[in-house]
Image 1: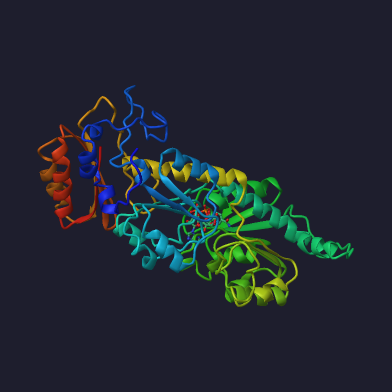
Image 2 (image 1 turned 45 degrees about the vertical axis):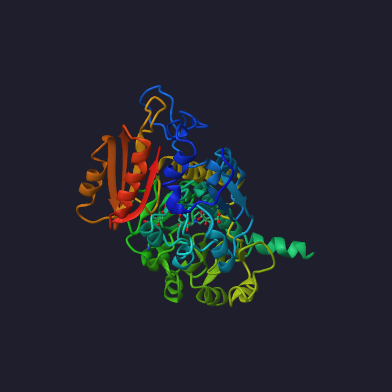
Length: 471
Ligand SMILES: NC(=O)c1ccc[n+]([C@@H]2O[C@H](COP(=O)([O-])OP(=O)(O)OC[C@H]3O[C@@H](n4cnc5c(N)ncnc54)[C@H](O)[C@@H]3O)[C@@H](O)[C@H]2O)c1
Ligand SMILES: O=C(O)CC[C@@H](O)C(=O)O
């Protein structure tokens, strides 16, 4: 490997001419994949030929910034590729994030780092974002797609962890465990049974019956609860759960309401004063989805009036970037009111924070990043069309993989294929998602000098978002 150099995003995808001028022979003798034939190599079973790892750059030229304590499993996978990996335990304030993001090709985050258009427009070298979590609401996905920046996440590796936490909270709220434990910590013995309940036979209302909601449904039924759910989609009920037609119907029937919807404009303050009114007196609310989904001042009123017998919150409109004594009114104006309530469990966004979940997420997202960086495969991307292609092998010399991310307008493929027409197009695939399209083609009989010309010609098309030529 060569010594690290600063290379720009445009030259990353097109570092071919640069690399070739350094070592023309190496151009068509890329190193074997470290996980040759394995999942990382993106291998689709076809034949036993040795897989060729596509790297039109020295791997150590790839600069990765990992924030928010991304798990060791993910760090190891990325380092094993030879990439330069900088790792920070916390998120960064916007000004520091902007400084750092200018320099990197890949950024890995969790839920706290806000990758807004303002931040992303400074990220001139950025190829891909890895969200080492489920939620992707912290990223401006549309801006990223329109600028050819792929985004990957881990859609269900922590679902079980969240579902288990919610089960624990249902029992804890029903038995007022938080309060009893706090009292004992203060030296107070307070043995009570008034308003403490079994959960057997109670109704759990799940709002959002996706990966977490449906997993929770199974666990809750196993504990003897009746389950109803509300979702914008008509979804198959698991076990004896029952879908109800409206949120209001769910609120009126459930003893426990638990929220598992994504953060969207439609779910902002989805549970506010009117919804608390609809809930049964003495019922409970659990929110482990996103802080924007519940109107907290309205929740405080519902708790104080006795409408709610308890609540558990894992997520908040504003969450601090690092651990510390930050859960005060400076962060959220009502923080201290919330802290003063009885039978309310407040946790610091730990729904997915288990060793099992974080390890699995580290592997899943890091592997997706490697496949994208090295081979251009977008399968599981949340914002680009999903495109995959059998990888090139070492017995296919003089091949190159052309990736062209472009605006989804008529006539582009004709022009692209005119540019590729001098070569044999061995395989080609194209797909679109909204305004953005992704074309990948493997071409053969490519001479060293052709590659720069292909790239320059594709770059000159006015539909271009990003061109990468991997070989
Ligand atoms: N607390 C944590 O640590 C933690 C961990 C993982 C996920 N989450 C949050 O939980 C959310 C749900 O996760 P998931 O994996 O189950 O997601 P999912 O995408 O599998 O399921 C979400 C469900 O919500 C439904 N939905 C969307 N908008 C709706 C609306 N307006 N009304 C009713 N239903 C609606 C969808 O149709 C879908 O079935 C994530 O988006 C994330 O924000 C939090
Ligand atoms: O680990 C995190 O920061 C986020 C956890 C969770 O909210 C998710 O979206 O997966």
